[in-house]
Length: 299
Image (cartoon, rainbow, N blue to C red; front, top):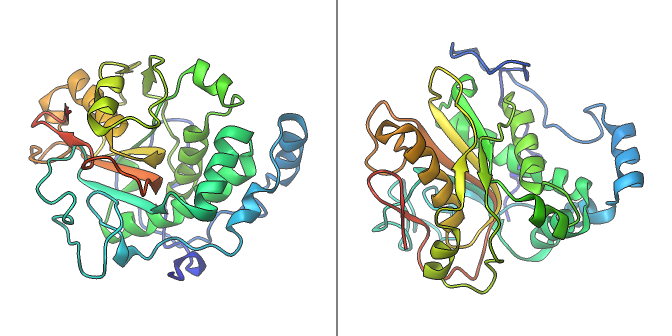
């Protein structure tokens, strides 16, 4: 395992503002990683846990560290061996057209990471979600800093879930919680740009069945900020086949036109699409989510 969880943040420059961030480039400042203990949320976190549940899931990650970056594909986010991936991807994705250009993840969906994600998603454990989100924020901040991403031009979007699904899963919007932690590190507020129609659970479905299950269920709910952002960052808990993420990026591209095709073969002025997920399923069925030239999904 790596030791990057002990590294300080080298990001971000911008505080969270009430208005969408400006497009001017701000100087990069150094900050310490956000933690529940130092962001003045101690009282509210305790009250929230007392009223809404949640507890020890965060401790699951006390002795856990993300998979080393060198063993994660920077294109699809999947696990790889040493030197098996480069900017063009890995053997699982190199010949596949993706809806996004780059991926960031903590590791495979197993062990303490899986337990912390399920504690947040199914047991309303907000502290577990924030612990996962803090680690994901650190990984994303390092990657964005390396790629010289300007946070002022970032549009941060959680993968949408439905009210019915949230009620089935104890009511917590876990992807928004993860996106909020990433946004706290970047100085960007997450935007609930997308909404979703309820569909049956995807667990156990093949890649093609997942694509069919999610097709046409996600749409843009309101207008985007102006000017157009340089980077669109989609945040989710787990990627299995990439069908949901591809459908999200397809909805954005369909709504705003071909100039929004931020995946493969994008116009030079198009935003860069990023997929940021806490985990990648180790039981991927088929190749990662694929896209057409307009950012859409291939089954």
